[in-house]
Length: 237
Image (tube, rainbow, N blue to C red):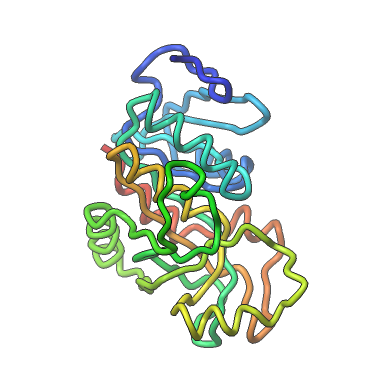
């Protein structure tokens, strides 16, 4: 069933086996323009840009996911199910729940906790924690070590809501569920990978800190989170 409703590629093989997924389409374009050679744009539906190219002579794709679990749920499912993609690594921003994390620190999600009903609605999965792919995480940890880059392997929170009326709830989530940071996509990505027998991981850069109130600009989030990009790009095959 290709092309799909949201990806216009009509042939297998144009999208690489490993796809990096930032939320922002302009971050996907930045990665393609900055790091990849022999770039082919493969998607522009809804301005959700997708590119395949080579990194150090090895093929890899990058495609935006949009914001939130419904959005990444659609794109990751179509990539896994219909385009023979084996690995998806979300590379995104997050808000830190602890003062121990600084702006630009990189987090590798060991697992994700969520109060979302995404997985329950999708196939009846009723647990609130989903683990990342151990195989992918092991590779990413080794790559980070080889590159001399520090990463924090921790539990994160995937939220359906950006603007909570009770802002202080993050303190209970941090205390009761062990989440060190919040983002909005990983729970759905990990669930789709498990449902379809694929691999998923999540690398995050701290864009703001809910405790210290430090934050980055939208331009910095688009163009400056390069350490996690360099780690993930080494998965090119």
